[in-house]
Image (cartoon, rainbow, N blue to C red; front, top):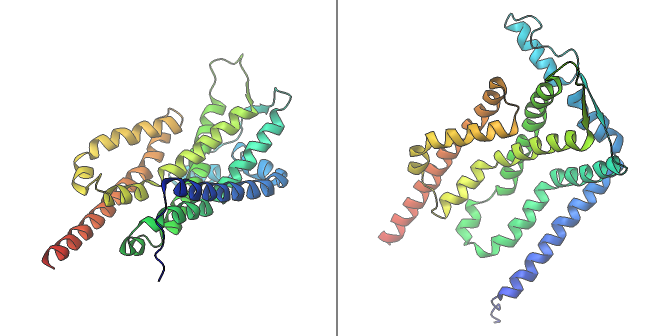
Length: 274
């Protein structure tokens, strides 16, 4: 019976290279499809939050009327224009937006390639415990992307689009600035929603415990408020709206850490008894 040869460091690098190549190719292929869907992606997705009939603004208007505030939260105009001031500005925006779309849509496959690389180094029971990792991580990422698109982005556009220091100044935003703000809001939210996954793995390797997370809850609150201030406009209402789901994710992460920690303690006890 042949014994499988242990892989060297260079073998691992070669294996990692092919996983990265396949993940990159998936992003490029999906990005190429997105490149061909220029009209839909720009007119309906990217510039959707710029329109007054965007679904989020309709929600805010309905909430305002339900609370008896009339039309105080209703968006009636977007007093700004988007322009491109460089020769290759629109093509560059088209190209990088397509790549971003390819990455977002292909995120589950990118995770799959990452999982294929690290899973051989795990024990059988660790692989069993991590079943569903790709599904859960992808679901959290997509929920974060949707939160960033439907909540963070409209709040930012509405605040910054209406902000003015003088009636003599008209808001003409550059295309790259607008897309950059939207990209940062969406990707930051997507990555923040991966917090429970990070807590799970940090607890597994012993870097975090549920007691540590509970003890440092107040510091986590400061960090959450800081993140909210970075990815949202500097008004209290927007920061509160963004802070609430992040705090919920932190509490869920504590529960996950507690579950993992107790499971490890039971396994350790059973090993000592045997």
